[in-house]
Length: 511
Image (cartoon, rainbow, N blue to C red; front, side, top):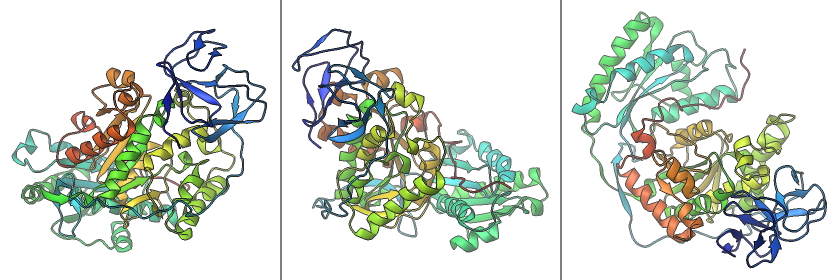
């Protein structure tokens, strides 16, 4: 991929091999585009694609040197492209496993942040007490317990970031064995034993399929002073469990408040990479800049977790060529093929072509174009491992976790895997937070940042505006990782987002 060039203040040429250019502002019909001698055939909106020259029917439309679709008919020079005239079609992609893998060049200097060192050697960026339900039937109870601990009540515990409830809509009426139950159990365990959690209280109803005993046995969890359990049917019901839970958490708070931040290596940072409400500018500013930040993080020994499997479809070959081994590359292809040939067959979901109305309005034609931008969040270093949803991340560096594209579900899997930060790019304005891991919001364009500044942490639109290049923007994002990890509140935390975004992936039947 070559560095894009601004041919004028109005348009961008991303790659010399592209047959399209990108419109940066609203341009009227019949305008002569400076530097290219192209007359616009119709009005164009910011982010829309314009043909650089004539493209014949069924010829590929090329962006960043990559095929993002095919012309539905003969397209004239200066014609505006949309999802109507850029067709999504399956086509063969050449895979050269590991051909572009190279070992990470680590920085000699030491980089630290102020984190919470745990007994197991992991380091948290926050210090929460978690109240976890095994089943939807105990959801009200865990939320009532957490709600009791208001900001006023927590003032006496300055080293505790909060008491957070994690409930979900399943746990019973589901398959008792197999991957659906295993997935739920490892997701719950990932939050119970998360580095951002000092202690956990797990609450079940008593007759559910996701039993506390089965959860603990399968995930090697054991009751201790930091991990307590309650069963509502044994406690005497709802009110009794809430009262007992409050008393239990009060005792946990005393111990959790004894934790202090210490200087710890950046190698302990594990960042879940997310994008939502994407637009054309996602691939021009926020996503490649986040990729630069991930490259820096990896060079200090940290971990970046790319996910959202439907949103790498069409560019998966650019990841398999970065794999450390053929085995890792095959793992990624196995996940892609499972989505295409099993999970999403015959369903109107984005891996089968169509992206959301918001993506389309933001200038994205189809999943191929969206994936082109989405994959940039992963930077350029070697792909070290591929994980199933909510698996424990045990490799440092750039890794991939199989998740859906729906952000709360995807981030839940990443956090369960150990992500202690979330970096979230958006072009349309997604409002998202995630407990217990802070979410850093990266706006792709200045208009969005100004319109939703209370939700956005960083304005990556500075790249589009010509104020910073991708490298400078990436360094700014990386430094924000350090600040947020060390205790600075992200915008989503200030707004108290993240109380309702715990959403384990439900892949099985309900019955």
